[in-house]
Length: 170
Ligand SMILES: O=P(O)(O)OP(=O)(O)OP(=O)(O)OC[C@H]1O[C@@H](n2cnc3c(O)ncnc32)[C@H](O)[C@@H]1O
Ligand SMILES: [Mg+2]
Image 1 (cartoon, protein in one colour):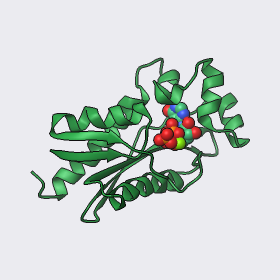
Image 2: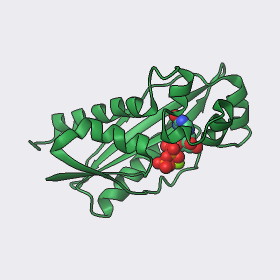
Image 3: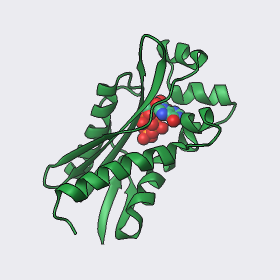
């Protein structure tokens, strides 16, 4: 059985990977440092966080490591949610893919600009706990149309697809 390790204990991320790798791989979650801020604030930082997590897992012995990282980007007009993923292999190959982005309400953006972590801000905004482990900010802001797990599933499909295209695995 091939194995995949996801660099997080967050069920929204682990389920996203299980959804895509299905029965061909055993998928587990393990904490992996992103080595960027807890709240990444650019595409570059968020993407780097995803790659760092994926690389760390392979260094620690994973056959395939997957890093998924959420962040925000601030533009002239608005602050957007951004998401990145990375897949690392034992042979040293790295794949990356970006996910959906939607604007944050100004009320949320202002707090994040002020240094608060989105995970905390969205819980207050939605009057819920651990939104980041469930439907996510994207789920709240789309009335559940796209959950955080579904959004990350799409990123994982982009990663796994590139992996299949480039490697002689199966
Ligand atoms: O345990 P880990 O894997 O770190 O999972 P996390 O939920 O903290 O997720 P990230 O580190 O990837 O996200 C970076 C920050 O952005 C927040 N965040 C990003 N996307 C979010 C979403 O859809 N819903 C809630 N919080 C989100 C999150 O809470 C963190 O503060
Ligand atoms: Mg985090």
